[in-house]
Image (tube, rainbow, N blue to C red):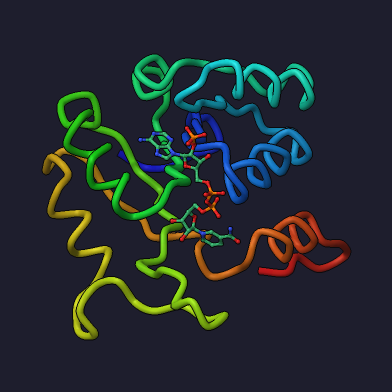
Length: 156
Ligand SMILES: NC(=O)c1ccc[n+]([C@@H]2O[C@H](COP(=O)([O-])OP(=O)(O)OC[C@H]3O[C@@H](n4cnc5c(N)ncnc54)[C@H](OP(=O)(O)O)[C@@H]3O)[C@@H](O)[C@H]2O)c1
């Protein structure tokens, strides 16, 4: 199980960060599967991206994809891993989530223990035949949108 140029990628969860990623793949001439709880959300966004983006329901997207970018918050990720355990076997899950919540004072607080690792907690919920990669979580959506495909030198 390794990521290659031929790997099929699905983005599941089309909120702020999912939508940015949904535009970056076709811009980079890569095909991508878009998926959300409401298929109509994925269909509308895919239509806007042209023929490199394809909408699928979540179960079908998991079935087709080699790599799943799961752009949802930590509590629903836990429920998602429990719901789709058997289908996630053999998949690479890319997880940009940060275990944080708004603190009501304009900042954020960590929602797990200071010494705990979200990656460890979440990977412990996956079947052993699946792999979890923490990635795409350090830049805000706007910075990611701006910096992707930067020329002449890539941003990262
Ligand atoms: N926004 C950023 O700048 C940024 C940057 C780095 C990392 N992140 C991380 O990315 C994750 C998402 O952040 P966001 O800002 O994009 O959040 P968001 O705008 O609230 O979007 C979250 C999306 O998750 C979907 N969702 C919730 N439960 C789901 C489920 N069970 N199955 C499928 N989809 C589900 C929601 O779709 P529905 O319409 O179905 O409710 C919603 O579209 C978070 O973990 C965050 O820490 C965000």
